[in-house]
Length: 130
Image 1 (cartoon, rainbow, N blue to C red):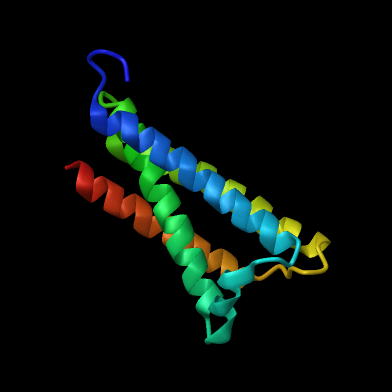
Image 2 (tube, rainbow, N blue to C red; image 1 turned 90 degrees about the vertical axis):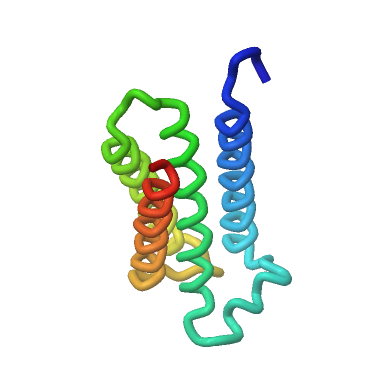
């Protein structure tokens, strides 16, 4: 950590990066059909939708908080919107790519759950920032 750097910003950047890597690992494992213990989400109705909501909600929360703290002089709502839209595009690309894997299926309800998580995460980040 550099002198004068906000410790909360320092750690939020790393938390956001770590969580992104965690999600990338989950996507790779799912693409290979090797989710292991995470397979339990499919044992109850809409469990995978809940997973999408939580994972992408937390990802947006962490990234939005990191960017809000890194850009304190910018309009908070614009920062949150930009982060959310970039994540939404990446999520759509990942969901679309699932049709090219035999172990995955493209699902609009998964995409909707992911987007609802992004909205919730952004909303919470804005509330925490105030």
